[in-house]
Image (cartoon, rainbow, N blue to C red):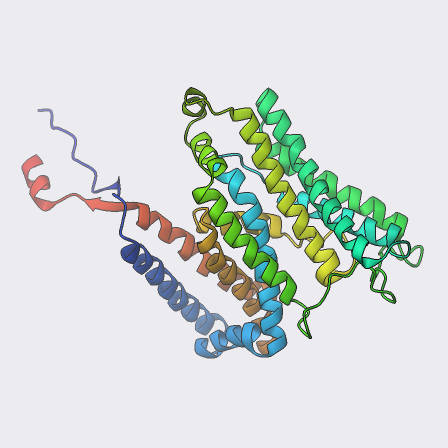
Length: 368
């Protein structure tokens, strides 16, 4: 006798749009659960009081005024890169080249500082640095954009490979400009004259970068939400065929959007080289081009929410370093705790968008 196959014990159903209060409650529950899991692992493997460990994370970010300013600076730089990637991601152009675009902006800035630092006044040098950094980042993003628009190449691989080319270009010029020769590094550029150093607001070294990125966040939110170009980006991201049907020139939108994305990344390189580090290295971007992808995804490409996502990632990174220093733990253990928290936060998005439906006993009885 043939029996009908039983329904699965559990299946996944896409939710209707949740009210923001419920979605935030799910995310908060995920964070609390991750802290509980981390606390248990900390107690089992190290014997430390997890509350002291969490206190050390807080101290690592907010323990002194200097730490707070560094936290703000790192949030600003990460947020700037995430803002740069967002227009491309909304268009479903997967720009993984933020790292290289930041490097090229930083390289252009360093070139202006080294070549013209003793030749022109700061009033001309700084505008030249700004224009050069923006153009360098824009050109570096324009190359894969043209290939995508004209020949539909894979933008993910193209932009990723451009990162390696940018890294080697920076390495080449570091050797050319190295001081002293044979050292393999440039050192602080124009340390005596401070030519090309971005102005400092009062005694606050990082305040200018934070304020500039705050303004950039507001402008990006307005651009994406209220401008015609922001609307075109959304339509292209939803369907290129629909965009063409309503008269949007898709290729032009792709190229224009990537120019904007690369220009902001290049400007971020300017903030790093001219504003804080005053040097150029192959690692000056510090992996932010890839971390910013996570920030953009966590925030669902909303510039306002990216502020919170950037804070979360930077806070955990600095907190992890403080744990290692304070308790003499291996850095890997601190990274494990950070990874667990991120896993729960990212995993919570599944429960925001989907729900698990279990087979009822009534249905099971009817099938028996």
